[in-house]
Length: 327
Length: 259
Image (tube, rainbow over all chains, first blue to last red; front, side, top):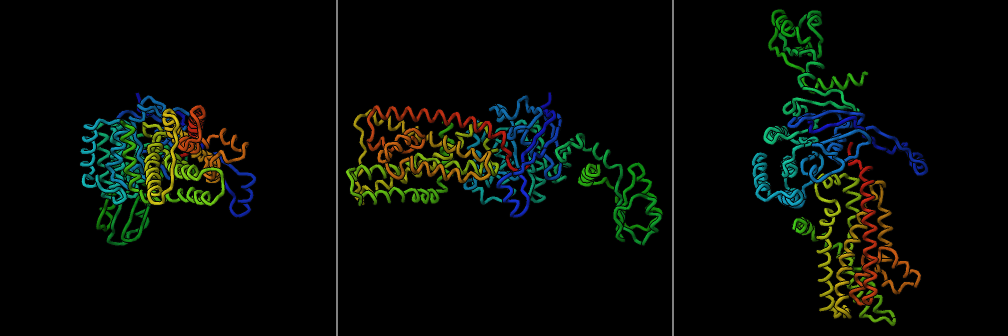
């Protein structure tokens, strides 16, 4: 049985629209114009126990709205959502004790007190036995390397340390399902890497089902085998990351550093020139003829360096969005 | 025990903001003090001891009983989306807000009691707390508890207006005005013209502060106190139903900020 099951989920918002300028303000005093905006439009997917899934999309794509519907914060306009067999919006105690939602831009920590006090509050709210609480706080703070900061006032912590404390606060009750909304936002690369490792470790250790949204493709590449791509409230792709690469990037990228100016005709025959600023040249070649093209380049061109690689996931996803726009 | 621990944890947070709490208390002190000065110079058949007792107990009552949760609920929880933090936890929203509010009330109520002692000791103000029967003491204590509950449910319901209104501040100010008049902040309600006095007994505001304070001053006999207690229970029941209804429908309109 799926841990998360979403069938034809629709979420609409009513948005007030005002004409610009003073006249618009006067008009809005008499007659306000409201518009329905579909944040999520008829999406369906299933997630099995222990999966770690990347939920990708640009700003306003509907990612956070979906996560909020899954965690019971928002009431769906229509459709069916089941998480661990519960309807999230009923917010049954057992359901709430089995999930956690961490939002990079929101916090639950008390600002004027050390993070430990918020942990103690959650201990009481989630009715966590003292032994288990001490064990989990000890484990998580060690894993995230924040043992020394547990008694420091939250306002004195760095952004990264605060995010780690947020994660500990959200994981104290050992949730089976974890929704992570931009957990690495605003963090430096070292901190991003630490958090990624931690999320992966948590997923493996507790067999937790994790749905992760992030703008950083590094997060998704490092953690998720399966991705769901969403834009304008619709799912564009749901499948393995490797399938996405195969399907949407049937080419490889050859980056060359040249010694001499080559014949332009020869370059055009090799593939699609993506960038050419002597001495640097980047060519897109069909996946199946990549090695042949590389050997041609090496034998016919005076090169200093050649590099063959898959296009970045970021580029592929950009292509997916561009293709949707073109449709 | 769980609730006490949560309350104590919230108390720590309030202690960190003690200076702010003290200033809020001072602001609420000036109105009643001004009224005491006014009555001191007024020629009236009502004893000054009764009036000063009333206003000083009103300072304590106002600080101890009157919740100010509505702005937090509307601006921070609903409009800025922090309600999500509460909804995700297996703990009733009402109790979560209440355990956050009670420490403020306890701290400010303590400031009120301290002020009373200072005035009794150094200004020699005569304070009379009047209970002709022991039963009246118990009823008065129940009225205080009822007042705290009623004020909290009422203010929570008021804050829920933000589910549907972008700017609920005007409604809050209107409510403050009604509480100011019918909660007995200006004058004890028995000094109002008869019709206004009767109306004030029928609406909920007098049950939040006025009746609990008046019970301690000894303005009512046992039978009247029991009737007031009954009225308070009725209002608590009515607002509990409102609370459920508003929260259920409000959550359907809640967007949680950021789509």
